[in-house]
Amino acid sequence: MALGTAPVIKRIHVLRRVGKPETLFGILTRAGNTDALYEWYGSPASWQFVLALPGTDLIYDTVTWQEKMHIADGKHAILRLDENVDCFENAPVVQYLVVFQDRLIGGGDARLVPSEVPAVDSNRDRVVFCESLEFTLWSPNNFIAADTGTGEQISGLGVNSITSSDR
Image (cartoon, rainbow, N blue to C red):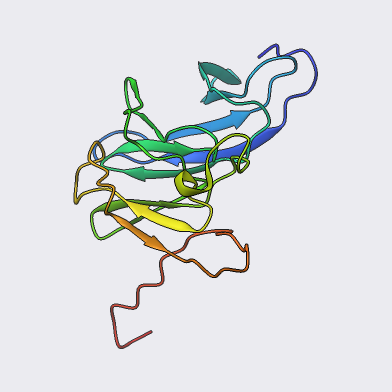
């Protein structure tokens, strides 16, 4: 991979799918260009360009859901990658992603208020979720607001699921 100056790996993601080999992806910065998604090839050992991402030097979060890779960067709508890249008009802008109970869940927002987005449209203090098993459906009512009134914002998402008395 010839990227000019040394690239910075922003995020690593292992895509696991039933009946297919694992695929290692990396989101890397590119000097004088937008960030990009690369796939690792072990022989010969190298990163191969997959696609340009819309942002530059952003913070990324990724999850695998429904055997597809989902990418959030806090500035653009969630991207979904399989053989193609999908971005739906009503997919939200979020900084963090998790999967829980058959839903893709996101929260946080890196856009500046009010210069990049009105406060009412920001997800800085909001957790949003899609319809069950349906990435393309994001109802405007599917959110949990963490309005603290202190200006604090979501700094990460996690799932704590204890399903056994052994834990």
